[in-house]
Amino acid sequence: MKNNNIIQYNSFNRETMQRVLNPKPWLLERLIPCRIDIKSDGKKELDFPIGWTNFNIPVDQLNADRLEINAQAVRTGNGIVMVDIDTKDLSALDRDISDWVEERLAMIDTFTVETTKGYHFYFKCDENMANQVRVSNHVDIRADGGCGIIATNNSEFSYRVICDI
Image (cartoon, rainbow, N blue to C red; front, side):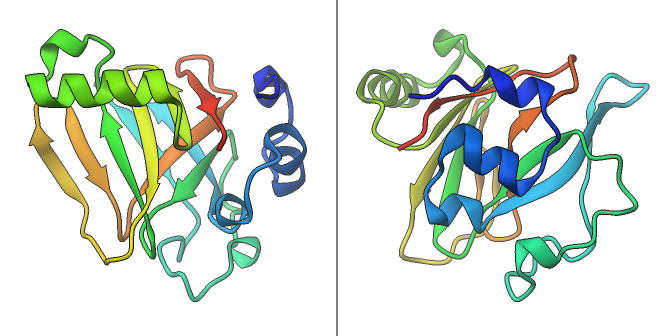
């Protein structure tokens, strides 16, 4: 796997992501420029270009001019789902999910991002799925109309690609 630390120091554009990650076409087609910050209440705040959930608008035609871009996200849905695990403390998860996460981390068999709080696992999916929040303790599913951050230069967050299959 390539060294992804360069992401922290480069502008967040399609060419940089292609050079650093050498991603598969499915990923490049889904990269969305965005902004991630901490709100005054300590929660994460995300801002995206208008129309980012519309797969009829190619990513390179999204207008992000109004944003001060500091991150890149992957648009989910339309054949891609992301399992969002919001903890690295696997004992906080239900046992079957904890086992599943341990297996995924050991196998490194899908595009995976280690986040500030946990992990994002990306999978191909033949059926349309809706986003599902709290399917279990610390577990969300991002699908149609969803996304997952994969890189930022905001020092309050950490997103590191640990498997770029």
